[in-house]
Image (cartoon, rainbow, N blue to C red; front, side, top):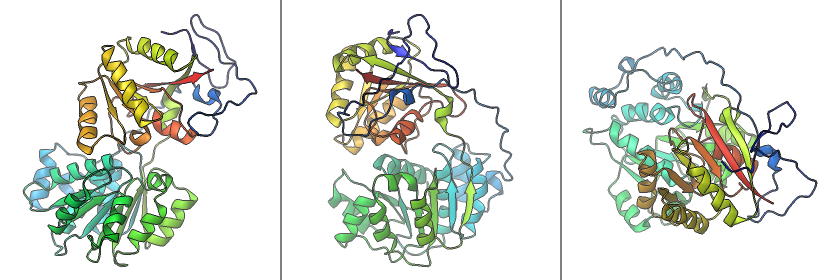
Length: 405
């Protein structure tokens, strides 16, 4: 392990340990090369708090209890689903009733099925095509929603299409002309299609805003308002978010009618992640230190964050040449290339996934052992999102952040 790592135990003085350097902040604030805000490196250091034993959630339903069609029940059983998660157990009955729903839930809690299953049940009685519009912040999340939808509607003659940036828009227009039942898209591409008169939302009776907080963080608020205003006012609206901010409250007031709130949000994952700083002289030294870390077999599923698309690809290539299996995901990759990289990482065919912040939110990547910030995040909120990829579902996690002097 490099001797440039520092730790600070929350609420206690800094202590030196063999091979571990303490961090001593100074009063100078260096300029950030990536144009982000200055973040005191001390904020990247925190000893993990042991997770309190949580009382297991006791659902009031089993999936067989929900009034779904025989075909839908068959597909649910085929996926091995027996007992719903908290968000599924509490949200599905309200969605089936046609209520507007605010779902407050972290990523990885099963919220996608919480809105898809009752939508599929209600959609079997709907003639309009398309009748459902689902908005998501990233193309990866849109693709994940589509994959789950297709698995639930197997053999039911219900169809979906994904419309996202970075893919051929003419092909997406052709897909829309086939009149799918469900359109899943990112706000920017949806607005492009509406501007081209290629998409008509007059028949939409159900609108889903997934990861709404992230869409607002990414600056999609105006696009979302434009799109929502083109849907019928008597639609059902389902709104899922991990947080409630003043901006989100205003959106809720504008878009939803007498909504019921279902909250199953848990505490910040970052409290349970061991967080350390690694000091480096420059970029070459960072690469040397990173390679040393990854030689440790305990670093078995590592998510490395870089600042730029070019830098992420170059770093992944260098790791691969040094014998460390690695894949990259960034904005210059095609959709199929990004999906392939994610699948290789999920299936543990590669140990390291090097990513820009596009992967920080909305992706469900289980069992990440370590998050390494090779380049510092632009904001502290981005930092929290990044390290939230590890230490999930009761597992321990570790996050390192490189700081150059």
